[in-house]
Image (cartoon, rainbow, N blue to C red; front, side):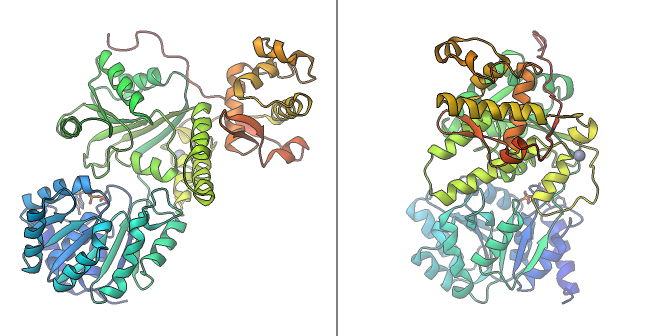
Length: 531
Ligand code: ADP
Ligand code: ZN
């Protein structure tokens, strides 16, 4: 192992304190900075809030020439540059929002050696014109931020990132550092390969965020559940509430405001000025809640976000982890809370099936969703499972700071109900050629007459009413868990239920099915709000 240059380390520390006002490096920062400042390549996997920016900003200041920062987030560049300028760093960006003369001025500054850092999006960097420009400039390094975007397996693939593979050959003497907060082992391998970083030094931080308490509960009356979380545990705290659709963002923000909880909406459909205003108010104010689609939060650095709530199921664990990671950057106790239900699973499957993208893409999307679902329905420590997903080991069975560890679910033997449910699906299909969504299947199991059961004479089926040992609510909980385990599958536009890939052994009685007792909270009492 090459020992770092002691002089360089001192200089890095001096910059850390003089420019950024901090007195010590965190985690791997010092080692990463030493590697890159010394001219080596690096691959950095660090969770959100871990402090990735300094890992390329300080080497850019230590080395001669300009550090080129590749980022997909054009909307954030102006803010990032303004923040750097605020601490006396010579920074600029090149993107489509600049007028021609502004871009030309930046190019002149670059060639004159007057920039420490220059931000641009990958699609800009790979243009022949930009490559020629950079070849005429003196470069300190390339920093490839959000490097998981190069991975086709990942949840956030951006084709423009593939072009960055040329950097290794085109700029052989310039060190490269790739950074991401969302790497699984598969993504890590893929980005290393695609960016030609086989010779790089790899820095993998622990992804654990011990101060975040993970909690996932079944969705019952989501807004009431959220309101209860806020009023009982996070009164007056800042928080982010994520919803899937713009409409539910709007209605949820309004609903909270009506109950005296200060909340603002944020989504891509809002006017840019309104969005900017809401974001700034959230950053400045204390105790404000922002209700947002996932468009919100990229690059947001507010240390005292006390809770992140999901009212809809995220599409992947990577996304969930990144979003929940915005809580508690200051290290103080924080909550990552989510409510999810059967409907989420069905609608997301449908969305994937109906969406654009090839078979491979859809297969990836489905397996991302399945992993997310398994996290929701786990009966063991959520943190252990999250870390395992990122290829890491907590070193213990229980974290003591997730809902499962704090109140372990009681489990029950659901083998017989699972067999009954599968039999019902099979009978309906074989004898009537019919497939139904969860609602009607549960009605059949409970033997409850409705228009459809009368129309189709479901009461004549041998499975009619065979599931009366469970309540409707228990059946819903059972179904969710069976879906998460692939014993049942939801199919097609209407989410009709069919036996899943793991149904066989259950039907044949070769395995027992242990499920968690339903944890659905009681419906929040009316008027639990402040008014
Ligand atoms: P990431 O990009 O990994 O999400 P950032 O680079 O935005 O994280 O850093 C997160 C926060 O931590 C920022 O407010 C940053 O200024 C702060 N930070 C980074 N490194 C240090 C350090 N060594 N000491 C104190 N604060 C730090
Ligand atoms: Zn735990």
